[in-house]
Image 1 (cartoon, one colour):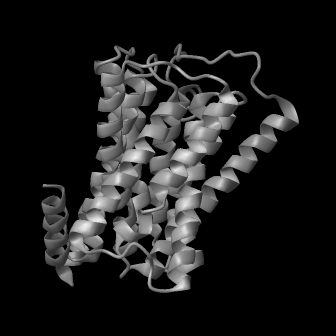
Image 2 (tube, rainbow, N blue to C red):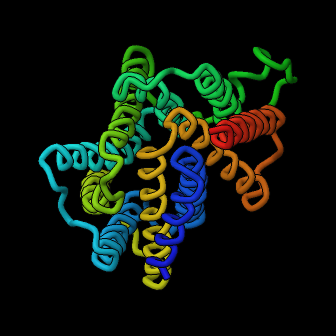
Length: 329
């Protein structure tokens, strides 16, 4: 069945063309990554984040090896150049999960998430630098507007009076006294922001190997991810003892979601418009917001709701414009 889904997506890609297919793959990536986030939220009292990532990485590797074998994809790239691209992408992608785990004791989680999402919104610039792709004004503007929506969801207190004049609200304020302050805080924020742009550059290089199988590209990712998360778990000195049935379910769902999300993310940026893909990736946080409101019973927040509307409207508008452009050609 897994192999059949892959063949069906390839057929769609051949039918609609690269840039429209890139939009479809980007939407799939947001949904599958959201599934892994949901697992993390539901099971946060059963397992540490590091333990979840370790199990996810192991099953991701198994799934990717299976797909490579069944569909006849190479386990190793054909050239040293392709191998270099693969290792850069796998390493940077996995470390992008590892660094937030380290920062969680120094910065509020909302700020870590916000800075982490900065990279997606800089993809248009990364594509320009790496691939000399032209900067499209509507994609640059869409990224700026959409990231404003991200800020309104993750840090609504930043935007209450500045943009829409909302009355004071009472968002969940993180008050941990051990968070970094002063120069250290600014250095961590700046360093992570630079790393986020580095992540965007690692995505941009995928266009240089657009004919290379996304399965082959991502084969090392699961193992590298598990190693990084394992090191993080040892550093945390905290290992929870889960119910093994629960742990198996997490491993299967999280691993499958992670594998398909990674494949969709990779393929979308091999063949699609990377600036457009970056804007679409912000929709993931809208899914999370709705989940928090309806499942975790988070209170309604007008600023966050407005941010979600901004993201959705921006994404739909740009996607429709791109599809119309594709029809004209």
